[in-house]
Image (cartoon, rainbow, N blue to C red; front, side, top):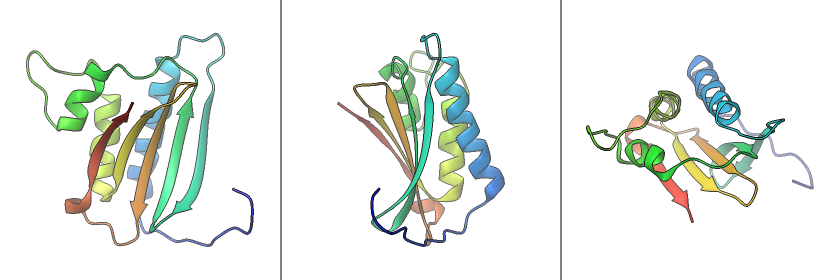
Length: 130
């Protein structure tokens, strides 16, 4: 984060990206049990991608909520309880990016990676790291 800024341009659909970010921020606030929820959004260039990181200080995302998102399908017995994470996943897929969920000491960090040459077949949702 220190040092000169690197100019980077990624073509994307701003409507879809706005929906993805709004959905993740809303999810972070709605499921945060602290008195004053904190959400941080940062942007960085990493490798060949623009990364948007949404971090919160909440309790984390239940692995049972993430499993259907990461598998790309729900069943009668294995399903998420809301639509927010699905909206984020579908939106990132439409944008041809990648979505990663990371458990942190302070809560959860969701990383959206967008590549300038992204195509829908390149996209994927990565599991939470232990």
